Length: 202
Image (cartoon, rainbow, N blue to C red; front, side, top):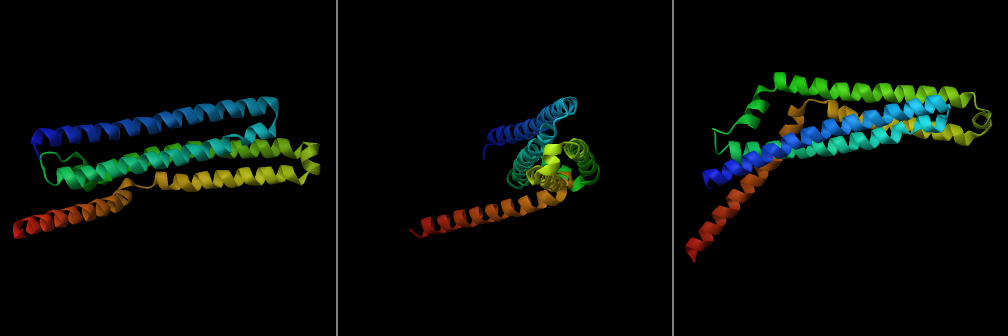
């Protein structure tokens, strides 16, 4: 392939990775702003239902982050397998994976910070909601209130479980994608070779 075309594809894909990183940061900022505003409103209004609202918001946020990170890993490993392996002068993603250590730890600490923020918000949300609910006679006398609390707690648990995947080091996740792309590359080479052989026979 023409080197200029390769470089254009490389820069385009690297730009997508940077854009996804910004989207994840932006999503985190929006989520935390919304959650803190809702918590302040719920505490001020002493409304335990409002205080449960952050749970589904954080769950959706975490799932969206996972989706964005999977896209980022797919792009990064595609670059490694299809571009950098053929053009050693373009080796940013390959070096990042081989270096692992410092970059991996930096990303892991950043992801852990995100999940700690969500965990702290979830604890405040559930604790304040529980405190207000237990002092509310309609909830005391109605089992449905406790069901709502239990569902909210379960939602938070799911969000944190999904978030655990975010907090993991990227190296292990990337290895999976590398193997997938290498399999695709291997099949494509076989297909091209078979096509060339058939063309020669004819």
